[in-house]
Image (cartoon, rainbow, N blue to C red; front, top):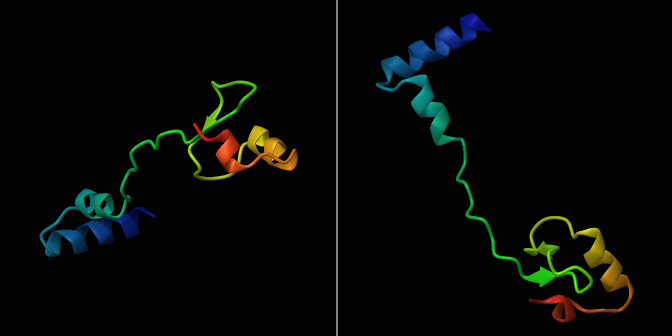
Length: 73
């Protein structure tokens, strides 16, 4: 592993970069925190942005027949 790292650092140096600069480029962009779009009517402190998995309270409310519009903030 050390040998591979040294080889990569040397290749980066030949191209005019250091390895840290090259690996930072591909670290990805950080997203800004999204604003909450939905709130649990039973506990308004529980919110969801609409991104990722639905929280359990959201799934339960939808199973009870509520719509996303009913839970919108």
